[in-house]
Length: 299
Image 1 (cartoon, helix red, strand yellow):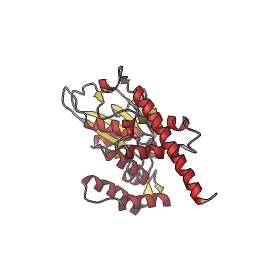
Image 2 (cartoon, rainbow, N blue to C red):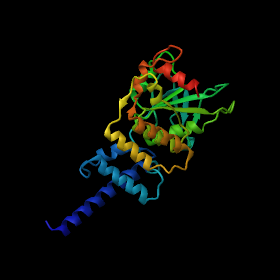
Image 3 (cartoon, helix red, strand yellow):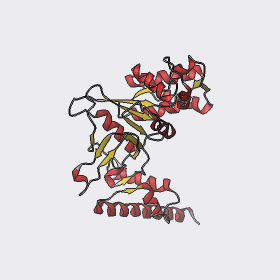
Image 4 (cartoon, one colour):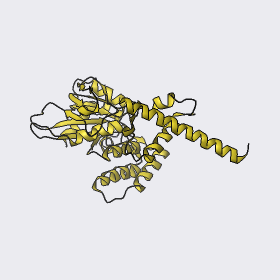
């Protein structure tokens, strides 16, 4: 087959892919419904060899049509983030004839709605004094471990199961900006991440749009006890160097990122969240909850 004919066939296939995705977008916009990226792929298996191929077409159309987010085209990702806490999430009344209200309870898990935007409303019980603590947990297994504890060191728990998807990041942003309508108190948003370069990178992704303070785990906490530390792998060292090179060094929030990464590289060690399961605080209590309460008390 000549290269010219092959080029024509490729262009025809690309055009067919674009038209198919546009067809699905138009159908769902007219119906006022949402479609996931995975749905688009499975409804067009004859055109796309993989979901990454259909995802590329979606990204191209978002840019071509001048959209800031694929949600404007009625496209969402599959639900991934999970939350647990006493709060109510409500979409704007104009978004649907009968908008679904999400009533969440601490101790029970709720999938974070993929269609959440900055227009959604958050209702929380008034803390009366102090503030609500929102704890972002990097790992789902640790998130579940905390839910099984007798005492939960936060009013709201959230996990994005690693790097946050759009919906999880948007919810954290909404909570970070929330103020109680009764007492005016804000939210204390903290993050529990692995004390390694990847954990720092996950934290950075949340901090792009939200004020999330690192609460643990810290390598220095375990250096003092001489346990729980693991040597950095070569890929982790490369990740730390890459992240450091990407920092401008001018922003205040980047200074803590730089400090943590530099300490890891110079010390050569990391620590994972699970190491805190056996951590003993100065008061003598042991476990992850005790570690979290100890860190939160120190500010």
